[in-house]
Amino acid sequence: MLLILALLTGAAGAGIADWIAVKGRIYTMDAARPVASAIAIKGNRILAVGEDLKAHTGPSTRIVDLAGATVLPGFIDSHGHMAGLGESLENLDFRAAASVADVQRIVAAEAARRPKTEWIRGRAWDQTRWPGGRFPTAGDLTKAAPDHPVYLARVDGHAAWVNRKALELADINAATADPAGGRILRDGEGRPTGILVDRAMGLVSRHIPVPGDAAVERRILRAAVECARLGITSVHDAGVTAQQLAAYRKRIASGDLPVRVYAMIGGDGPLWREYLGKGPETGEHLTVRSIKLMADGALGSRGAAMKRPYSDDPANTGLLILNRAEIERVARQAVAAGLQVNTHAIGDRANREVLDAYAAALGGANDRRFRIEHAQIVDVADIPLFAKYSIVASMQATHATSDSRWAGDRVGAARLEGAYAWQRFLKAGVRIANGSDFPVEEANPLPGFHAAVTRGGWRTGESMSREQALRSWTMEGAYAAFEENEKGSLEAGKLADFVVLSADIMRIPAAEIPKVKVIRTVLGGKTVYP
Image (cartoon, rainbow, N blue to C red; front, top):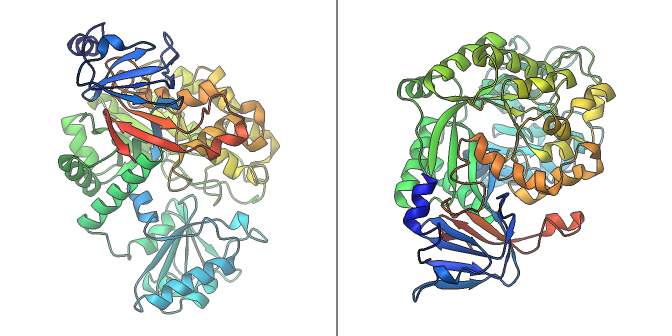
Protein backbone atom coordinates (compact mmCIF):
# COMPACT_ATOMS: atom_id res chain seq x y z
CA MET A 1 0.00 0.00 0.00
CA LEU A 2 2.77 2.44 0.90
CA LEU A 3 4.55 1.76 -2.39
CA ILE A 4 1.38 2.57 -4.31
CA LEU A 5 0.90 5.75 -2.32
CA ALA A 6 4.51 6.71 -2.89
CA LEU A 7 4.10 6.38 -6.65
CA LEU A 8 0.80 8.26 -6.68
CA THR A 9 1.99 11.15 -4.53
CA GLY A 10 5.49 11.42 -5.89
CA ALA A 11 7.24 10.15 -2.78
CA ALA A 12 9.62 8.24 -5.04
CA GLY A 13 11.04 11.48 -6.43
CA ALA A 14 8.27 13.51 -8.08
CA GLY A 15 5.07 15.25 -7.01
CA ILE A 16 4.24 18.73 -5.74
CA ALA A 17 3.56 19.28 -2.05
CA ASP A 18 0.65 21.22 -0.59
CA TRP A 19 3.05 22.52 2.01
CA ILE A 20 6.60 21.99 3.19
CA ALA A 21 8.01 22.61 6.66
CA VAL A 22 11.69 23.60 6.54
CA LYS A 23 14.58 24.49 8.84
CA GLY A 24 13.60 22.14 11.64
CA ARG A 25 15.21 19.24 13.48
CA ILE A 26 13.00 16.35 12.52
CA TYR A 27 13.36 13.02 14.31
CA THR A 28 11.82 10.58 11.87
CA MET A 29 12.12 7.19 13.63
CA ASP A 30 13.21 5.95 10.19
CA ALA A 31 16.49 4.04 10.48
CA ALA A 32 17.43 5.02 6.93
CA ARG A 33 17.17 8.73 7.75
CA PRO A 34 16.95 9.30 11.53
CA VAL A 35 17.14 13.11 11.36
CA ALA A 36 16.06 15.55 8.64
CA SER A 37 15.39 19.27 8.31
CA ALA A 38 12.36 19.36 6.01
CA ILE A 39 9.10 17.49 5.48
CA ALA A 40 6.72 17.78 2.54
CA ILE A 41 2.98 17.11 2.85
CA LYS A 42 0.43 16.32 0.15
CA GLY A 43 -3.12 15.74 1.25
CA ASN A 44 -3.07 13.75 4.48
CA ARG A 45 0.19 11.95 3.72
CA ILE A 46 3.90 12.62 3.87
CA LEU A 47 5.25 13.21 0.41
CA ALA A 48 8.95 13.36 1.26
CA VAL A 49 11.38 13.87 4.13
CA GLY A 50 14.91 15.17 3.73
CA GLU A 51 17.08 18.26 3.49
CA ASP A 52 16.37 19.92 0.13
CA LEU A 53 12.80 19.35 -1.05
CA LYS A 54 12.74 21.98 -3.81
CA ALA A 55 11.78 19.28 -6.30
CA HIS A 56 8.44 19.05 -4.51
CA THR A 57 7.79 22.80 -4.52
CA GLY A 58 5.29 24.35 -6.92
CA PRO A 59 3.58 27.71 -7.33
CA SER A 60 0.90 26.83 -4.78
CA THR A 61 3.16 25.10 -2.27
CA ARG A 62 3.12 26.80 1.12
CA ILE A 63 6.45 27.00 2.96
CA VAL A 64 6.44 26.87 6.77
CA ASP A 65 9.65 27.98 8.51
CA LEU A 66 10.17 25.85 11.64
CA ALA A 67 12.94 28.21 12.80
CA GLY A 68 14.93 25.34 14.29
CA ALA A 69 12.03 23.79 16.21
CA THR A 70 11.96 20.06 16.96
CA VAL A 71 9.53 17.80 15.08
CA LEU A 72 8.59 14.30 16.22
CA PRO A 73 6.07 11.74 15.00
CA GLY A 74 2.77 12.37 16.75
CA PHE A 75 2.74 10.79 20.20
CA ILE A 76 0.77 7.54 20.42
CA ASP A 77 -0.71 6.96 23.85
CA SER A 78 -1.11 3.19 23.95
CA HIS A 79 -3.36 3.12 27.00
CA GLY A 80 -5.82 5.85 27.89
CA HIS A 81 -9.48 6.28 28.72
CA MET A 82 -11.03 8.98 26.57
CA ALA A 83 -14.48 9.16 28.15
CA GLY A 84 -12.81 9.06 31.56
CA LEU A 85 -10.52 11.93 30.62
CA GLY A 86 -13.43 13.97 29.36
CA GLU A 87 -15.39 13.23 32.51
CA SER A 88 -12.42 14.12 34.71
CA LEU A 89 -12.22 17.50 33.00
CA GLU A 90 -15.82 18.08 34.12
CA ASN A 91 -15.76 16.56 37.61
CA LEU A 92 -13.79 17.28 40.77
CA ASP A 93 -10.07 16.54 40.60
CA PHE A 94 -8.24 15.72 43.83
CA ARG A 95 -4.79 15.15 42.37
CA ALA A 96 -3.44 18.15 44.28
CA ALA A 97 -5.22 17.32 47.56
CA ALA A 98 -2.64 16.88 50.33
CA SER A 99 -4.99 15.67 53.06
CA VAL A 100 -8.51 14.52 53.89
CA ALA A 101 -9.23 18.09 54.95
CA ASP A 102 -8.39 19.35 51.46
CA VAL A 103 -10.90 16.91 49.96
CA GLN A 104 -13.52 17.88 52.52
CA ARG A 105 -13.21 21.58 51.65
CA ILE A 106 -13.64 20.93 47.93
CA VAL A 107 -16.59 18.56 48.43
CA ALA A 108 -18.30 20.92 50.89
CA ALA A 109 -18.02 23.79 48.40
CA GLU A 110 -19.48 21.59 45.67
CA ALA A 111 -22.33 20.47 47.93
CA ALA A 112 -23.18 24.10 48.71
CA ARG A 113 -23.85 24.86 45.04
CA ARG A 114 -25.73 21.67 44.09
CA PRO A 115 -29.32 20.61 44.82
CA LYS A 116 -29.59 18.14 47.69
CA THR A 117 -29.56 14.46 46.66
CA GLU A 118 -27.57 15.21 43.47
CA TRP A 119 -24.49 13.00 43.13
CA ILE A 120 -21.08 14.55 43.68
CA ARG A 121 -18.40 12.86 41.58
CA GLY A 122 -14.63 13.16 41.57
CA ARG A 123 -11.40 11.23 41.20
CA ALA A 124 -7.62 11.11 41.68
CA TRP A 125 -7.39 11.14 45.48
CA ASP A 126 -4.34 9.28 46.77
CA GLN A 127 -4.07 8.43 50.45
CA THR A 128 -0.39 7.55 50.08
CA ARG A 129 0.30 11.28 49.72
CA TRP A 130 -1.52 12.21 52.93
CA PRO A 131 -0.28 12.28 56.53
CA GLY A 132 -0.39 8.71 57.89
CA GLY A 133 -1.08 7.19 54.47
CA ARG A 134 -4.27 5.48 55.67
CA PHE A 135 -7.50 5.07 53.73
CA PRO A 136 -10.13 7.72 54.59
CA THR A 137 -13.66 6.88 55.75
CA ALA A 138 -17.27 7.48 54.83
CA GLY A 139 -17.58 9.64 57.92
CA ASP A 140 -14.95 12.03 56.58
CA LEU A 141 -17.01 12.64 53.44
CA THR A 142 -20.32 12.72 55.31
CA LYS A 143 -19.09 15.68 57.36
CA ALA A 144 -18.50 17.58 54.11
CA ALA A 145 -21.70 16.52 52.33
CA PRO A 146 -24.31 14.86 54.56
CA ASP A 147 -27.22 15.29 52.10
CA HIS A 148 -25.53 14.40 48.80
CA PRO A 149 -24.36 10.94 47.75
CA VAL A 150 -20.62 11.21 47.08
CA TYR A 151 -18.52 8.89 44.93
CA LEU A 152 -14.80 9.64 44.54
CA ALA A 153 -12.58 7.29 42.54
CA ARG A 154 -9.02 6.73 43.70
CA VAL A 155 -6.19 7.90 41.43
CA ASP A 156 -5.75 4.39 39.96
CA GLY A 157 -9.48 3.98 39.30
CA HIS A 158 -9.51 0.74 41.31
CA ALA A 159 -11.04 1.97 44.56
CA ALA A 160 -13.85 4.34 45.46
CA TRP A 161 -14.39 6.45 48.57
CA VAL A 162 -18.05 7.06 49.32
CA ASN A 163 -20.05 8.75 52.07
CA ARG A 164 -22.83 7.32 54.23
CA LYS A 165 -25.54 8.63 51.89
CA ALA A 166 -24.05 6.61 49.04
CA LEU A 167 -23.75 3.51 51.24
CA GLU A 168 -27.40 3.86 52.25
CA LEU A 169 -28.60 4.28 48.65
CA ALA A 170 -26.70 1.13 47.70
CA ASP A 171 -27.89 -0.70 50.84
CA ILE A 172 -24.33 -1.61 51.83
CA ASN A 173 -23.99 -2.61 55.45
CA ALA A 174 -22.18 -5.08 57.69
CA ALA A 175 -24.20 -7.95 56.25
CA THR A 176 -23.28 -7.15 52.64
CA ALA A 177 -20.94 -9.78 51.19
CA ASP A 178 -17.85 -8.91 49.16
CA PRO A 179 -18.56 -9.43 45.45
CA ALA A 180 -16.31 -11.75 43.46
CA GLY A 181 -13.22 -9.79 42.47
CA GLY A 182 -13.96 -6.98 44.91
CA ARG A 183 -13.59 -6.01 48.54
CA ILE A 184 -15.53 -3.82 50.94
CA LEU A 185 -13.09 -2.47 53.51
CA ARG A 186 -14.50 -2.82 57.03
CA ASP A 187 -13.80 -1.56 60.53
CA GLY A 188 -13.14 -3.76 63.56
CA GLU A 189 -16.85 -4.46 63.94
CA GLY A 190 -17.36 -5.46 60.31
CA ARG A 191 -19.05 -2.24 59.21
CA PRO A 192 -18.16 -0.76 55.80
CA THR A 193 -15.59 2.01 56.12
CA GLY A 194 -16.54 3.74 52.88
CA ILE A 195 -13.73 2.30 50.75
CA LEU A 196 -14.73 -0.09 47.96
CA VAL A 197 -12.05 -1.92 45.98
CA ASP A 198 -12.38 -3.07 42.35
CA ARG A 199 -15.68 -4.86 41.69
CA ALA A 200 -17.09 -3.67 45.00
CA MET A 201 -17.11 -0.20 43.44
CA GLY A 202 -19.99 -1.32 41.25
CA LEU A 203 -22.22 -1.78 44.30
CA VAL A 204 -22.45 2.01 44.42
CA SER A 205 -21.55 3.15 40.91
CA ARG A 206 -24.52 1.31 39.40
CA HIS A 207 -26.79 3.72 41.27
CA ILE A 208 -25.21 6.78 39.64
CA PRO A 209 -27.30 8.09 36.72
CA VAL A 210 -25.92 6.84 33.40
CA PRO A 211 -24.69 9.67 31.12
CA GLY A 212 -26.74 10.23 28.00
CA ASP A 213 -25.43 10.10 24.45
CA ALA A 214 -24.91 13.85 24.31
CA ALA A 215 -22.82 13.82 27.51
CA VAL A 216 -20.64 10.95 26.27
CA GLU A 217 -20.09 12.65 22.92
CA ARG A 218 -19.23 15.93 24.65
CA ARG A 219 -16.71 14.23 26.95
CA ILE A 220 -15.01 12.32 24.14
CA LEU A 221 -14.64 15.46 22.05
CA ARG A 222 -13.30 17.38 25.04
CA ALA A 223 -10.75 14.63 25.69
CA ALA A 224 -9.73 14.57 22.03
CA VAL A 225 -9.15 18.32 22.01
CA GLU A 226 -7.03 17.95 25.13
CA CYS A 227 -4.98 15.19 23.48
CA ALA A 228 -4.35 17.37 20.45
CA ARG A 229 -3.19 20.19 22.71
CA LEU A 230 -0.67 17.80 24.25
CA GLY A 231 0.75 16.49 20.96
CA ILE A 232 -1.08 13.15 21.03
CA THR A 233 -2.29 12.12 17.59
CA SER A 234 -3.40 8.55 18.36
CA VAL A 235 -4.95 7.00 21.45
CA HIS A 236 -5.57 3.36 22.28
CA ASP A 237 -8.84 3.71 24.21
CA ALA A 238 -8.71 0.93 26.79
CA GLY A 239 -12.25 -0.30 27.22
CA VAL A 240 -15.01 1.27 25.10
CA THR A 241 -18.77 0.76 25.07
CA ALA A 242 -21.16 0.71 22.13
CA GLN A 243 -22.33 4.15 23.23
CA GLN A 244 -18.77 5.49 23.06
CA LEU A 245 -18.18 3.96 19.64
CA ALA A 246 -21.33 5.69 18.41
CA ALA A 247 -20.01 8.98 19.78
CA TYR A 248 -16.70 8.48 17.97
CA ARG A 249 -18.46 7.76 14.69
CA LYS A 250 -20.61 10.85 15.02
CA ARG A 251 -17.63 13.10 15.67
CA ILE A 252 -15.67 11.53 12.80
CA ALA A 253 -18.62 12.10 10.47
CA SER A 254 -18.63 15.74 11.59
CA GLY A 255 -14.94 15.98 10.74
CA ASP A 256 -13.91 17.47 14.07
CA LEU A 257 -12.25 14.61 15.95
CA PRO A 258 -8.60 15.77 16.26
CA VAL A 259 -7.15 12.38 17.20
CA ARG A 260 -7.10 8.83 15.83
CA VAL A 261 -8.53 6.09 18.03
CA TYR A 262 -7.65 2.42 18.39
CA ALA A 263 -10.58 1.18 20.44
CA MET A 264 -10.49 -1.84 22.75
CA ILE A 265 -13.90 -3.33 23.48
CA GLY A 266 -14.59 -3.12 27.20
CA GLY A 267 -14.79 -6.76 28.25
CA ASP A 268 -16.74 -9.83 27.22
CA GLY A 269 -20.34 -9.09 26.29
CA PRO A 270 -22.68 -8.27 23.39
CA LEU A 271 -20.27 -5.83 21.74
CA TRP A 272 -17.45 -8.38 21.80
CA ARG A 273 -19.73 -11.04 20.37
CA GLU A 274 -20.74 -8.64 17.59
CA TYR A 275 -17.11 -8.24 16.55
CA LEU A 276 -16.42 -11.96 16.89
CA GLY A 277 -19.04 -12.37 14.19
CA LYS A 278 -17.85 -9.66 11.83
CA GLY A 279 -14.12 -9.41 12.54
CA PRO A 280 -11.84 -6.36 12.73
CA GLU A 281 -13.01 -2.87 11.75
CA THR A 282 -10.15 -0.69 10.51
CA GLY A 283 -10.03 2.93 9.45
CA GLU A 284 -7.82 5.99 9.48
CA HIS A 285 -9.70 7.58 12.38
CA LEU A 286 -11.24 4.59 14.19
CA THR A 287 -10.15 0.99 14.42
CA VAL A 288 -11.86 -1.71 16.49
CA ARG A 289 -10.04 -5.04 16.58
CA SER A 290 -9.32 -5.84 20.22
CA ILE A 291 -10.84 -6.53 23.62
CA LYS A 292 -9.73 -5.16 26.98
CA LEU A 293 -9.90 -7.65 29.86
CA MET A 294 -9.19 -7.08 33.57
CA ALA A 295 -7.19 -9.77 35.36
CA ASP A 296 -6.65 -7.96 38.68
CA GLY A 297 -6.82 -4.66 40.51
CA ALA A 298 -4.19 -2.02 41.26
CA LEU A 299 -1.13 -1.91 43.49
CA GLY A 300 -2.02 1.31 45.29
CA SER A 301 -5.27 -0.14 46.63
CA ARG A 302 -3.63 -3.56 47.19
CA GLY A 303 -5.92 -5.15 44.63
CA ALA A 304 -3.14 -6.31 42.29
CA ALA A 305 -3.02 -10.13 42.41
CA MET A 306 0.28 -11.30 43.88
CA LYS A 307 1.87 -14.75 44.11
CA ARG A 308 2.73 -14.08 47.75
CA PRO A 309 1.14 -11.74 50.31
CA TYR A 310 1.79 -8.02 50.27
CA SER A 311 4.82 -7.08 52.32
CA ASP A 312 2.79 -4.39 54.12
CA ASP A 313 -0.42 -6.45 54.38
CA PRO A 314 0.54 -10.08 55.13
CA ALA A 315 -3.06 -11.37 55.05
CA ASN A 316 -3.69 -10.04 51.55
CA THR A 317 -2.62 -11.35 48.12
CA GLY A 318 -4.84 -9.01 46.12
CA LEU A 319 -7.78 -9.73 43.83
CA LEU A 320 -7.90 -11.95 40.77
CA ILE A 321 -10.81 -10.57 38.75
CA LEU A 322 -10.51 -13.09 35.91
CA ASN A 323 -8.85 -16.47 36.11
CA ARG A 324 -6.75 -18.25 33.51
CA ALA A 325 -9.62 -20.28 32.09
CA GLU A 326 -11.77 -17.21 31.51
CA ILE A 327 -8.95 -15.35 29.79
CA GLU A 328 -7.99 -18.39 27.70
CA ARG A 329 -11.58 -18.76 26.47
CA VAL A 330 -11.61 -15.18 25.17
CA ALA A 331 -8.10 -15.55 23.76
CA ARG A 332 -9.14 -18.58 21.71
CA GLN A 333 -12.18 -16.70 20.43
CA ALA A 334 -9.93 -13.83 19.39
CA VAL A 335 -7.49 -16.08 17.55
CA ALA A 336 -10.34 -17.63 15.59
CA ALA A 337 -11.79 -14.22 14.67
CA GLY A 338 -8.52 -12.42 13.89
CA LEU A 339 -8.89 -10.11 16.87
CA GLN A 340 -6.48 -9.03 19.60
CA VAL A 341 -6.63 -9.46 23.39
CA ASN A 342 -5.25 -6.77 25.73
CA THR A 343 -5.42 -7.72 29.40
CA HIS A 344 -4.85 -5.51 32.42
CA ALA A 345 -2.42 -7.28 34.76
CA ILE A 346 -0.43 -5.52 37.48
CA GLY A 347 0.56 -8.11 40.09
CA ASP A 348 2.98 -10.98 39.41
CA ARG A 349 0.28 -13.62 39.87
CA ALA A 350 -2.08 -11.86 37.46
CA ASN A 351 0.68 -11.50 34.88
CA ARG A 352 1.49 -15.21 35.07
CA GLU A 353 -2.18 -16.17 34.79
CA VAL A 354 -2.49 -14.05 31.64
CA LEU A 355 0.77 -15.37 30.19
CA ASP A 356 -0.37 -18.96 30.69
CA ALA A 357 -3.78 -18.24 29.19
CA TYR A 358 -2.25 -16.54 26.17
CA ALA A 359 0.30 -19.35 25.74
CA ALA A 360 -2.47 -21.93 25.57
CA ALA A 361 -4.24 -19.98 22.83
CA LEU A 362 -1.17 -18.85 20.87
CA GLY A 363 1.07 -21.90 21.08
CA GLY A 364 4.35 -20.09 20.37
CA ALA A 365 5.77 -17.21 18.37
CA ASN A 366 3.09 -15.44 16.31
CA ASP A 367 1.88 -12.13 14.90
CA ARG A 368 -1.31 -11.84 16.96
CA ARG A 369 0.23 -9.03 19.06
CA PHE A 370 -1.66 -9.90 22.22
CA ARG A 371 -0.85 -7.40 24.93
CA ILE A 372 -0.55 -7.23 28.68
CA GLU A 373 -1.59 -3.80 29.85
CA HIS A 374 0.61 -2.37 32.66
CA ALA A 375 2.80 -5.44 33.43
CA GLN A 376 3.97 -3.60 36.52
CA ILE A 377 5.13 -6.32 38.92
CA VAL A 378 6.33 -9.35 36.99
CA ASP A 379 8.30 -12.31 38.32
CA VAL A 380 11.71 -11.98 36.67
CA ALA A 381 11.50 -15.64 35.63
CA ASP A 382 8.27 -14.87 33.72
CA ILE A 383 9.60 -12.01 31.59
CA PRO A 384 11.00 -14.32 28.84
CA LEU A 385 7.47 -15.67 28.32
CA PHE A 386 6.46 -12.31 26.83
CA ALA A 387 9.03 -12.79 24.07
CA LYS A 388 8.33 -16.51 23.67
CA TYR A 389 4.68 -15.86 22.83
CA SER A 390 5.24 -12.50 21.04
CA ILE A 391 3.32 -10.57 23.70
CA VAL A 392 3.53 -6.78 23.74
CA ALA A 393 4.11 -5.12 27.11
CA SER A 394 1.88 -2.04 27.14
CA MET A 395 3.42 -0.10 30.03
CA GLN A 396 3.02 3.41 31.41
CA ALA A 397 6.24 5.08 32.49
CA THR A 398 4.66 7.52 34.93
CA HIS A 399 3.25 4.64 36.97
CA ALA A 400 6.82 3.91 38.04
CA THR A 401 7.51 7.45 39.21
CA SER A 402 4.10 7.76 40.88
CA ASP A 403 4.45 4.42 42.68
CA SER A 404 8.11 4.70 43.61
CA ARG A 405 7.36 6.25 47.01
CA TRP A 406 5.59 3.15 48.30
CA ALA A 407 6.07 0.26 45.83
CA GLY A 408 8.91 -1.17 47.92
CA ASP A 409 6.67 -1.22 51.00
CA ARG A 410 3.96 -3.04 49.06
CA VAL A 411 6.05 -5.81 47.49
CA GLY A 412 9.48 -5.84 49.18
CA ALA A 413 12.97 -5.63 47.70
CA ALA A 414 13.04 -9.01 45.95
CA ARG A 415 9.91 -8.41 43.89
CA LEU A 416 11.11 -4.95 42.87
CA GLU A 417 13.56 -6.68 40.54
CA GLY A 418 10.65 -7.26 38.20
CA ALA A 419 8.88 -3.98 38.89
CA TYR A 420 8.45 -1.57 35.96
CA ALA A 421 11.44 -3.45 34.56
CA TRP A 422 11.78 -1.79 31.16
CA GLN A 423 15.36 -2.78 30.42
CA ARG A 424 14.76 -6.36 31.49
CA PHE A 425 11.87 -6.50 29.02
CA LEU A 426 13.81 -4.85 26.21
CA LYS A 427 16.86 -7.06 26.69
CA ALA A 428 14.55 -10.11 26.56
CA GLY A 429 13.34 -8.95 23.15
CA VAL A 430 9.95 -7.69 24.33
CA ARG A 431 8.30 -4.74 22.60
CA ILE A 432 7.17 -1.95 24.96
CA ALA A 433 4.38 0.40 23.94
CA ASN A 434 4.17 3.43 26.22
CA GLY A 435 1.21 5.44 27.43
CA SER A 436 -0.21 7.32 30.36
CA ASP A 437 -3.35 5.48 31.52
CA PHE A 438 -5.04 8.89 31.62
CA PRO A 439 -6.89 10.12 33.60
CA VAL A 440 -5.11 7.95 36.20
CA GLU A 441 -1.95 9.87 35.29
CA GLU A 442 -1.54 13.11 33.38
CA ALA A 443 -2.40 12.83 29.71
CA ASN A 444 0.68 14.90 28.80
CA PRO A 445 3.21 12.52 27.17
CA LEU A 446 6.23 14.70 28.01
CA PRO A 447 6.22 13.76 31.72
CA GLY A 448 5.86 10.16 30.48
CA PHE A 449 8.91 10.54 28.24
CA HIS A 450 10.79 12.11 31.17
CA ALA A 451 9.77 9.27 33.48
CA ALA A 452 10.94 6.71 30.93
CA VAL A 453 14.44 8.18 30.74
CA THR A 454 14.93 9.19 34.39
CA ARG A 455 12.50 7.12 36.52
CA GLY A 456 12.61 10.08 38.87
CA GLY A 457 15.94 8.80 40.15
CA TRP A 458 14.40 5.49 41.32
CA ARG A 459 16.01 2.22 40.20
CA THR A 460 17.58 4.02 37.26
CA GLY A 461 19.18 0.88 35.84
CA GLU A 462 15.80 0.17 34.26
CA SER A 463 15.60 3.59 32.56
CA MET A 464 15.17 3.75 28.81
CA SER A 465 17.51 5.63 26.52
CA ARG A 466 15.90 8.62 24.84
CA GLU A 467 15.76 6.71 21.57
CA GLN A 468 14.06 3.76 23.26
CA ALA A 469 11.62 6.09 25.00
CA LEU A 470 10.70 7.92 21.80
CA ARG A 471 10.25 4.62 20.01
CA SER A 472 7.95 3.39 22.79
CA TRP A 473 5.78 6.51 22.34
CA THR A 474 5.66 6.26 18.54
CA MET A 475 6.62 3.18 16.51
CA GLU A 476 5.91 0.63 19.23
CA GLY A 477 2.48 2.13 19.84
CA ALA A 478 1.81 1.84 16.13
CA TYR A 479 3.04 -1.76 16.11
CA ALA A 480 0.84 -2.64 19.09
CA ALA A 481 -2.15 -1.57 16.99
CA PHE A 482 -1.02 -3.22 13.71
CA GLU A 483 -0.51 0.29 12.31
CA GLU A 484 3.27 0.54 11.85
CA ASN A 485 2.85 0.89 8.07
CA GLU A 486 0.58 3.91 8.54
CA LYS A 487 2.04 5.87 11.43
CA GLY A 488 4.69 5.95 14.15
CA SER A 489 7.47 7.36 11.95
CA LEU A 490 7.86 10.24 9.51
CA GLU A 491 8.36 8.50 6.18
CA ALA A 492 7.06 9.07 2.68
CA GLY A 493 3.61 7.56 2.22
CA LYS A 494 2.66 7.51 5.90
CA LEU A 495 -0.03 9.63 7.50
CA ALA A 496 1.19 13.16 8.16
CA ASP A 497 0.80 13.04 11.94
CA PHE A 498 3.46 14.97 13.85
CA VAL A 499 4.12 17.38 16.67
CA VAL A 500 6.32 20.49 16.83
CA LEU A 501 7.97 21.13 20.21
CA SER A 502 9.51 24.20 21.80
CA ALA A 503 12.76 22.37 22.59
CA ASP A 504 14.68 19.25 21.59
CA ILE A 505 13.78 16.55 24.11
CA MET A 506 16.42 14.28 22.62
CA ARG A 507 19.26 16.65 23.57
CA ILE A 508 18.27 19.07 26.34
CA PRO A 509 19.08 18.29 30.00
CA ALA A 510 16.59 15.70 31.27
CA ALA A 511 15.32 18.03 33.99
CA GLU A 512 14.10 20.42 31.27
CA ILE A 513 11.94 17.86 29.46
CA PRO A 514 8.71 18.37 31.46
CA LYS A 515 8.88 22.12 30.73
CA VAL A 516 8.77 21.65 26.96
CA LYS A 517 5.64 22.92 25.24
CA VAL A 518 3.75 21.78 22.17
CA ILE A 519 3.87 24.47 19.48
CA ARG A 520 1.81 22.65 16.89
CA THR A 521 0.03 19.31 16.45
CA VAL A 522 -0.63 18.11 12.91
CA LEU A 523 -3.04 15.29 12.09
CA GLY A 524 -3.29 14.12 8.51
CA GLY A 525 -1.51 17.24 7.25
CA LYS A 526 -3.89 19.61 9.06
CA THR A 527 -3.08 21.62 12.15
CA VAL A 528 -5.37 20.52 15.01
CA TYR A 529 -3.55 22.54 17.68
CA PRO A 530 -3.44 25.45 18.19
